[in-house]
Length: 173
Image (tube, rainbow, N blue to C red; front, side, top):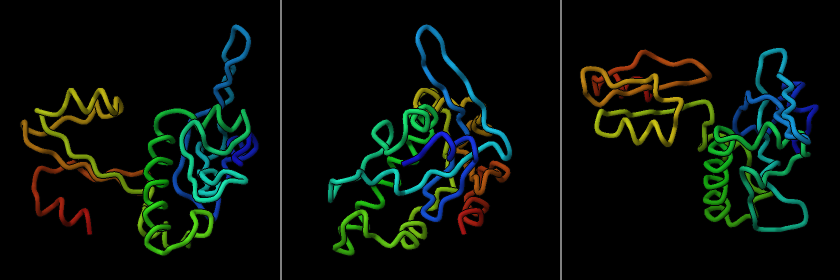
């Protein structure tokens, strides 16, 4: 269960599946209360928040994730939902392959397969407007000379965009 303390304390978890920097965004009677994260500005999302209590063979993600109302006020936005959905799908596949329940999978194996610190973005002029609709944060990432452009980000830092396939392959090693 992800809590307010986990979010505001920028907590780390051994079963990390991703990170989130969204503040607490609590919708109260007639107002929205924002409480921003201090310190490094993000908390980790634990795999355990995808495991519902009392239900076997089920993973939940996004707005269904296991959290307190305050934890959910940070976790429910698009970025963390994407991360949780991808991790849940990867974990479900791992559970099937290893013939285990989702709560019993080897978390280190999951983390090896699913690396939440790496993002691969491919952008072309043809797909630019659609990608901007799906992922608005990509609007500032433009294709170079109208060519397919590779953006690779790891551990919260991005490499220089490239249109060269060999450079992209090096980035992906």
